[in-house]
Length: 198
Image (tube, rainbow, N blue to C red; front, side, top):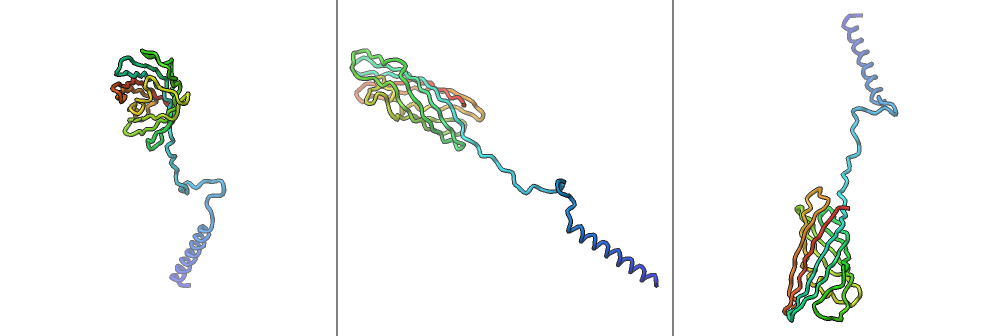
């Protein structure tokens, strides 16, 4: 057999073995069950957990006065407690209860029934590390009673701005508010508020 023909036969035989090996390898799994493939990539994409709302305890004390133009004043002091929920987008909502600390005192005799409890709705917005709150009345006890010291008359003006930078677990603020009573007198309130992360 000529030498060139021998070389050609060997090359052809070698190519057949290589092709058979490649075909077998393409149909088999080099990593049996239970053996991880070190070059494999995960088929699932990592999931990101959405931020959750935060719940805050609200505490506030408020002293209020109604000065009458004819002379004399009525005074009342309130304790307010409640909870707020701040959503990841900054929207804030909650409720609170204002409780009269002691009977209202007036410089003159009066027979009106003093309000003892006031349910409050709290709304607000957290932006740039500052939480702006506002309060509104949702009902009172006893029904039909009078707020002699004028707390509810300044309630819409009690709009504290509380600094709550990222990671803060609490903060404080104070607000003073006055408004005319429509009869030459004046309502005023002095409030101090505290928030703490629950």
